[in-house]
Length: 102
Image 1: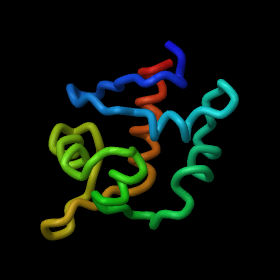
Image 2: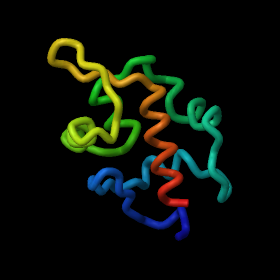
Image 3: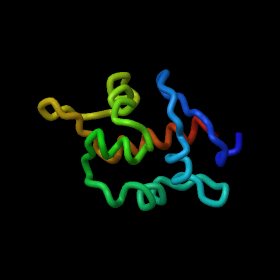
Image 4: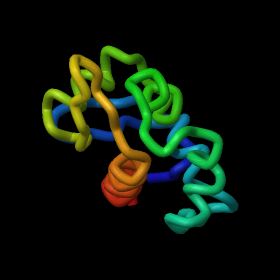
């Protein structure tokens, strides 16, 4: 499957339009390393993300992020009623998506 085509990534039964993530992960037909991914996607975000940040990074709605959290696809911390997601867990999730496509 060509990484530049529109495609769906499936994780724990949740289908995502993964173009935004893939465009950030692929450079010149090669997959970026974790360090390159961090520098290109996550460096401008705080160390602990909220649902809105994760949605912006993954290119999905907050409703989809909540679904990923509730289904266990993303690891999170709960602070009061708020979901907090450390950047490390978002990076791990992106790596899982990249492996599923590759």
